[in-house]
Image (cartoon, rainbow, N blue to C red; front, side, top):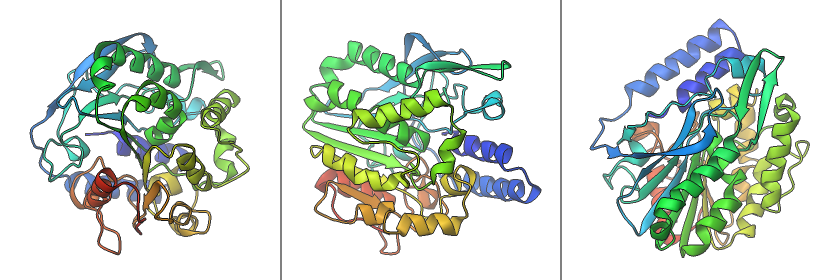
Length: 361
């Protein structure tokens, strides 16, 4: 099970202290765990050690691989929040490696049951998240001279990708379909490293789909004030590699989504975003659920930006407090429905088989 929700809730408690908020998030966490479905047969991942790659607090980094279908490969970017100062980084919640080397998982998007996961028959390359920098950093930080963090997320990803391709490159580059999937911080990290993945993998594969789950994108400029200059520069560089200008004062980022889609017409893009997302809205963005909802459905929000069915982008934007949809089972995730009755599972399945078309809310 992913620890994204645990990380996000814990970080929210640190940043937004208050008995009522803590009580609310604990209740939500209890419901989250209570509604998870029974697991099916687990995938068994191989851990590939990445020499010279380390997590935020110095743990050796590795990438996880499960090869089961040489025609279909999915590249997963784990989520897990961000850290930017002594308070948020010293908790170590976002800078530790959660997944064990003998990682096995069978829930939700990882399931090998096609009734549960639209990616059940895909091989998976999984990039764990443990640097607190949105997979963007290539620098070390010393916060107030008290706590050192290795923000080497981009370096780890590039080294990890090269290591995987050194072993499986011949197979991967002859695949027929590729999916790039990231959730929460991993979704943003996927986009910040998209050009490298496209060059090393995508250009060899005819059918390519991008799934961005709970990426946020509707904050105002105050969100970026908390980040240190090196990380802001890394984020700016990531967008720049896609020929997209990143300006913290030009918000929301959601309106930039269509620019990315049009830069890469050979891909099909699917963005999944809860209208009142508690993690990206209340916890990370310091806005009320209703404010977040207004922005998501507004003229510059993700739904209106991607509403044209002729574009290669589509949005799944149910009216819900949920944060992500593909790494949880049942009504808490893949079976979440829009008002029109379309589930997250159906949205992804449509994207994979027919390409981007209608957006749903």
